[in-house]
Structures are given as structure tokens and as C-alpha cells.
Length: 136
Length: 279
Image (cartoon, rainbow over all chains, first blue to last red; front, side, top):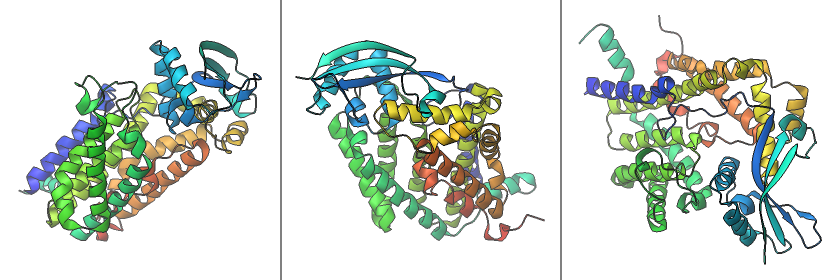
């Protein structure tokens, strides 16, 4: 029995080690590439901006923007919406979740200088509107 | 059988107290229970986008909500049985719970973003499920050693990926700082709240090359935890502190290592008389 169990261990370890050579990223056999890139200082994010009837910005929570509290999922969900040309549908879904004071939503692609952002410079380097919708 | 092969087999399948595995199972069950409660909505919701991975790779769309709730419920009852040491329920439910967790967590990672922090937990829980089927001391030792090996492999892979993808720039060009700044920016822009430590850390530049080297040393140095119990404890403490740092600076919580569940088998697999180096 001992030799059989040892063989199972060796086979299991080799299976999980394989992505070190192949670089494959699957689930649960993964190369674990989290935070592995030498990321640029500038980055693009897709998000939603909300406005009330006077045109003032209304802050939205992550739950309203992407129906999740996980930033990794929220980022991917918004990126997928833009990539699949579904910014309009995403805009309407966010409008349904938005607080009553919101009258207009914009889905935007914003580029930030990351180091400047954490130092307080929160104006994006570029901002492109992808979709716009009204709440009701 | 004798010689090096026998030694390796004895190391891979050591004889250990069954109570050690039970201790880890109980711990793992409690953490799983908390995870399933906190993530209940995400785990039982049908996603808008579908990019299937793993065992669900051949599927055309998300699973029906009722199926997801069923898988979640089986996992919950099993987690409860584990944490309360309800041995009979544990054993009966283990095979179904292992399958349920594989499908449920694969489903959650099939929405366009693989959730790497779920992987070690899932593999460990499948190993826990196998452990409940036996009271043999050899199986106990095998389970703990295999789980410890998977922990080590996970960290080594993460280190290798940084060198393969980021290269030397990951260490030399302040990639860690940029990741902290990226996490903070992403949180703020997507409606969350960034860590108050992110700004000062990036501005002061304390998260540059030395910290990147420490991270790489912890990840690539994980195999030292297999040498003896003292080194297993030492490495586990270093890895745990790294996760505390990640949680504090980036608000990214790796629940399995932060609760210690990832490291317990590594420590318990080492023999109690391996506190000192082997002669």
C-alpha cells in the first residue's frame, strides 16, 4: 500500500508542477501567474460613472458597478462587457442597480498614471465614453 | 524494498497520528464554512459571461441556479460536519462533497477570470475528503505530506511565473510598487476603497527591489519547508507574514494561507522528532 500511495503522490505532484514548463493557466492545474507581470505605470480600466439631475457625480459601489465585491471579478466583468460590445447592456444593468438619485450612467474607458493616482492625482490621463444610458 | 527508493517512499508516506489529520480537517472545515457563507451569492449566481475552464471546459453555458444551490448545500453540510467532527456524516458526504466543490469552484473561475486563490483550498479540501475515508496512520501521513507538497508547489509555481512573465524587471523595476498602486487604483475606480497604506508605500518607495526579492525568496524557497518541522514553521511564518503584507497594502485577502489552513499539513507532516536537522 505504501508504494502505491507514494506513486499517487509523485503523479499528483508532477501533474501540478507541469505548468512550470508549459505556462498553462487552467483550474486547478495552473501556473499561478498572479501579479507576475512587470506592469506599466499606466493602466486602462473600464468603469461606470453616474450623475444626478444637476450633472453632479454620484459615487457608485462595486456591487452597483459590477454586481460583485471582488475587484478582480469586477475588473474582468467590465473588461468583458467592453470587449464583447455589450457596453450598452451593461449600462442598463448598472442603471437598474443604481441609487434613486442617479439619472444618467456612462460606461467609460479611463487611463490612469498609477503612481500619480495613489499620490492623489485622480484625474485620468485619457477618458473615453463607451456607452450612455438614463436610469428611468 | 530497501535503499534510496524505500527511504523516499517512507518520506512520501510517513506514519502519522490520525488525530493530526483530524485537527487539520476540522480547521479546514471551519474555514470552508466561513468561505461558503461569505461567498454564497457569488457561488450560486449564474454569471453573465462564460469562459469555461477545467472540468467544465466542454460546457456551453453556466449551470442552472438550482444545481449551483445543490452543490453549495452539499459543500455546506460537509463543511459543517468537518468542523463539528461529525465523523459519520463526514465519511458519507466526502465523495459527493469533493465533486461538488470541484464543480462549484471551477464554475466560479469560469467567468473570464481564474481565481487562483481558490486553487490551493480546493486541492487541499479534496485531499481532506480522501482522508476522512480511512483511519490508517499511513494514510494520515500520506495525506499530510501530499497536502504539504501541494502547498510548496503552489508557491514555487507563483515564483517561477514571476520570473517567466515579468523577468528581471519584476525585481529591478519596482513591479511590486506598481502592483500596489494598480490594486489601489482599481479599487477606487471600481467603487471600492483602497488600502490607506498603498499611497505612502508607493511614495516612499519601500516596496521596491528588496521587498520583491523577499517575495521571490519566500516563493522559490518554499521547498525548505519540507526539510524538517522547524523549517516548516519558519517558512510558514514568513509566507503568512507576506500574505498579511499583501492584505494590508492591497486589500487582497488570500483566506486559505491567512487562516493558516495552507500551512498546517506542512508542519504536521514533519515528524515530531524532526525539530532538529537529521544527522
